[in-house]
Image (cartoon, rainbow, N blue to C red; front, side, top):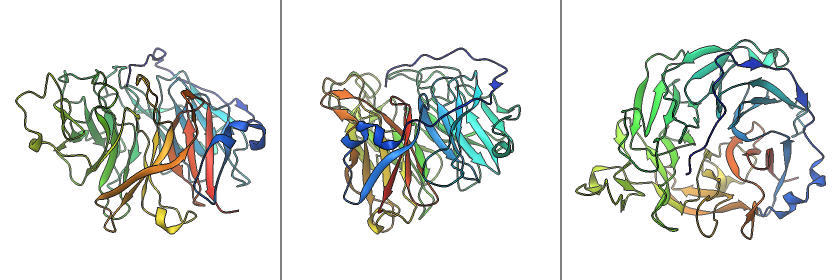
Length: 374
């Protein structure tokens, strides 16, 4: 993916209490009619006017928190539980690309490019959020592949990736091209997985607790090479190939020379080339038909420099009964790309307590809700 450019870091982020309406009623937007879904599924807006919406996290009271690639973090309360946010509250601003959000014990963790913040008891203080606690400043400040996707694992640790600061290169420091984890207080930082060019989405198997993650392949090898990857890391310490190999069988023309592919972990599934696979989730709800249970849904943000655009959709990767082997890869939702003109770019997913699925979109500044049945 190409480099991004961000607002400068403000060391004292300003917490705000402003809010806006969540946007017009779903029927007012004809774009949603362009989305194709399997029979029985419908899509609506959970919220609009959510600028550059990225990672999603759920608070214990049902409030949805939204990170962004700009400088703000939003809160979307749905107090009447009607499947639509009541308002869009700007929780914080002046941050350095706060892409990542995660919730633990009522506290909201926010990942900027170079640090992790924590807002305690935030659900009770949406109008007057507390001053954030700085959890960690151990992350590098490189902007290229600097968006942080964060989540707490089954081990109670906070997982934080650090992408490669380049298209393809030998990382200048060991922390680059890795997935790391730390204790909730920021201590005990350690690397969990190596050779990961740029993951902006991961989740744990509900069956065996293995970590699965998407990884974006490098550019400038043509339209069809390499494929993006879906990977499975059952244990710490595995190396997934960057910068030597991509998609398990595509050697880097410079760094792959003299290397053996057998040294590195192979993808669990090759995805489309340059689709920019991002915030994957296991579907753990009970609303969708049984065949979706414990399967993987992946938002494909869409290619940015391919001569013919692809992605801009949600795909489904099916797994075997043990949940360890990928058996299929197909489209679940599409229509954000019309011809070669995208009107939206899916980023991240969130499975809600009622089994519906939320999807963020940083181009259309929205969060959608997909449900099954009436």
